[in-house]
Length: 111
Length: 112
Image (tube, rainbow over all chains, first blue to last red; front, top):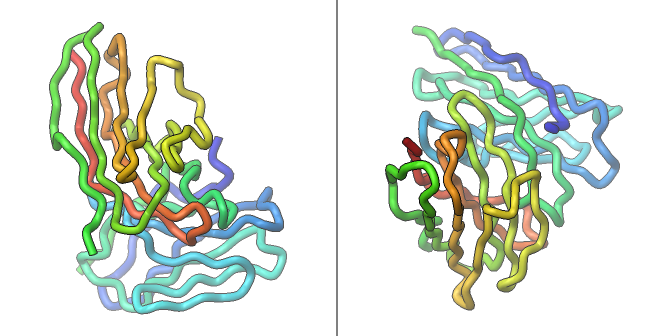
């Protein structure tokens, strides 16, 4: 079973920040939070990951709560092309390839 | 740098048949994981191969088997196909000690 819980769908206005939440209340101390996005019928694409500190890269920011039981993926200026399914997963760094995915959040960016 | 590739892109089989799907890992990656993704669901972990040995398996029956070759490419074999095996099959490569996995475009399998 997936170790994460995400809302099935969210809407966001184009140009605004998209904030996608994820609950991982049973996360272990050695598990990282990873985020992927998946365009319809293609393989998931890596976005960002983190352990306990907030992370930022050219694609997004990841905010992890202090107790590590939840996190938020932030797409700072959402575009129509950001309409995708977004997956949050938890995995030890050394087992990044054995991940259990939930059903993700379908983000719809509207003009 | 070459990304993860999979073949074929689409495949149609009938119940009871056998199928082999292929994956070439990203350059420098020695670990390959396979996932099954049913329509409307997230990817489900099937198994992982590291240095030609199975290195972890999800909740899939033995009729799902695999191989990894010395060049780190991999095959997924499914015997006695069932209708519920219809799905997108994804391959992902990573370093065992790496930080992330890189997915291929997938093979869409339809079992009739």
